[in-house]
Image 1 (cartoon, rainbow, N blue to C red):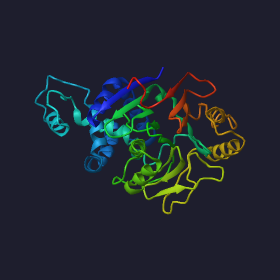
Image 2 (image 1 turned 45 degrees about the vertical axis):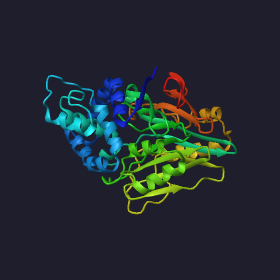
Image 3 (image 1 turned 90 degrees about the horizontal axis):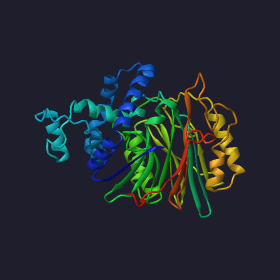
Image 4 (image 1 turned 90 degrees about the vertical axis):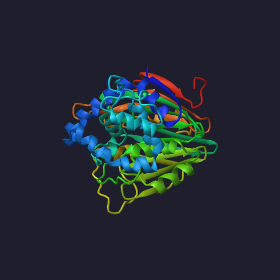
Length: 375
């Protein structure tokens, strides 16, 4: 059963609850990425944190609510034996809390580590590629958004369901990696978001990191608001963000240099995998998952004969053509990426059906639905 973390209140309070409830998964996630960065990029965790800190000036000045939420997430490692810590005192001042409330051991390292989780896409400089397939479909009164999220199986146990009820913004219900404040899901306004990783060089520390861009979409009251926000802020690294609301979906291809909107097909669909579809002048793409082209072609073909309803899209996401590197992906000895969860979102009815694990070997199935009674 996926761990459910309920948060509400100010950004800091939200982060504090997130950190407390998902403490072990956050620690496990940091260990996972410590090993992954070392193996894939030859970067030690202190080096990773050093890169993450380059986003601090932007986040503190332009996105203080996200920075405060990340701070709240980290201040769960208390050390009341050191009440005079200057680091904790400064942190307490920033958060408008007493020093005794947020005394932490090694707070700077903790802050850097949690920040590193949230900007992991940018630290890798496009060196990682989550092998995902995503689709948006608007047909009559139906608006659907769906994806298989493929990533390293070792990170599966560090996924959580994060439900956020916040002041003056829509409530959020999403699946995320513990410690990361923006990922895949929907909000109470009927705005949903999915993500495709794209491997391309370039990072701009003056722009919004990919996972925080996802959060900005989930903080929006409409697809138009989300698009305008990302066009204004820019996105720090390469990715594809598929955002939808009851009126339809828009693909947003991002690089460190530009933000390009994808046209909706004649069938009312946007389908994307792990490569750029539109031109991004000056951006050097290095496609890692060669099956991305086959998955895009296969999903497009299947969609032509599918129905625009939740059950039909769920079935599309079970497809194993090209197995094991299919839409429904299986780990192999050479490729450690697999489908970790499958999600189909109904934006009109404001719910999502989630299947944990490969959709042909479902480990657990449940609904996301913002503003449920338990919130």
